[in-house]
Image 1 (cartoon, rainbow, N blue to C red):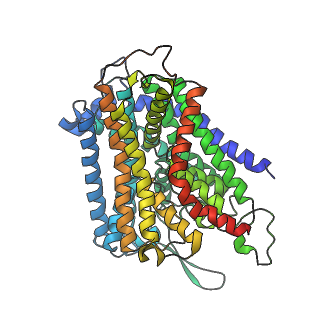
Image 2 (image 1 turned 135 degrees about the vertical axis):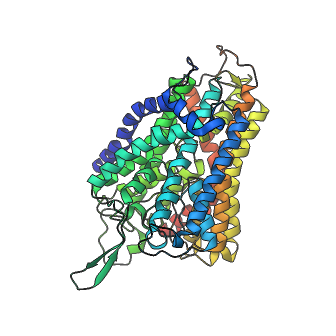
Image 3 (image 1 turned 135 degrees about the horizontal axis):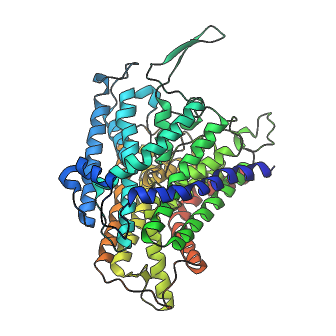
Length: 560
């Protein structure tokens, strides 16, 4: 019975890891064409500079780069908010979608601007084609491009070079990386049977003689960037569990690979830009090991039957099939649940609310740690925060000034890193505590006890990790939930981008020193062990108490 899950995991994770190597090389060419040796812009750079005008003409320091990111994202938010608020008056609305409620508009605009794609609505019910394409799909490109641009800038700074220009970088990421890869994936999805049409909903007569309205639309274009950009927002409410958003086993494979492909390639791009491929290999290995541990845990815990069917005359010999799409096989759900939360993607092909308690904790852990490949670009940036803390601790243990790639890590850099890591925990645990203790959360739960607590905990974990998936037993389309998670998504998106750029700015103001025999190597097993220990200790100390109140408590209740 274990052979099939093992082969499936090897096919998906191992195959994607192999493809990510050449893609990482291509992304390095696309995002850093001048490299360390040449200061001359290539043809694409000159084109993007001419499109961007004067703001794209010269390199930026970390403060100007940060301001550019924030200004660009404000424009993204305002444009999308306007489209959603006015969709009933705008074209490409063949099914006559009406206006959305105000707090839901704010939540949706914040969600897609922050690359979270948490959805408190159902796309086929609430949104016009224009809202889906010109609002949300556009954001799925440019929000993902923002993360890739920020990583490229951070890597250049660590390499001792200028950070570059954000407006050029975001065009490089959009037009040279995301758009061509999304075009290829969209073609594969259309070939696999996914709809791609601007016609309105189809009306069919069933065998019983009943008329049925079937929503459709330009789904393939939307889904390709949804997965590749670690966006995760579904065209339909059930997301990739919907037969028109994921028609077959093979489209499921394509989508699963797409979730982790660019995040894996970002690690190799980082290594090439800083000129330390062995270091990138160590980081990739630590990330991969943590992902595979959770994949193994998810599949193992889902091999047990669900308690929901315990009193029913149902044979349960293949594990927990509640909330699963049987077209994809028993292992596809838990594998997807771990990968989508390891990469801040958030799309689903099974209902996470139906996972066994400890299997449901595996995606939560991915969002709590928030560094296993992560969102495009920002996943490696989050790992950089753990690297700074790990290097500092290691330096203190051996009695030397901590150094990373020749840069001295001192109190200022560590404070920034710790602040970013603590903010993530504060948003999750603080939001969970408030909503678990008030009618805002308690009144919208479909479950009581530990599972109800897990639903609240998962929602804030998803918002803070910019993930977007959810335990969908929660009635979260209310004003308090829309406003609270919207604010969390915006803060949790930009704090982990701004503070690492500030760290690089602080490091670049120092004199870079050559590594000596006494410097802790970042290219061996010792560093890998120290990095993994730092991640696990920080995660365990922060989130283990909450886990005991939710999925762990629920597991022991079922055992007894």
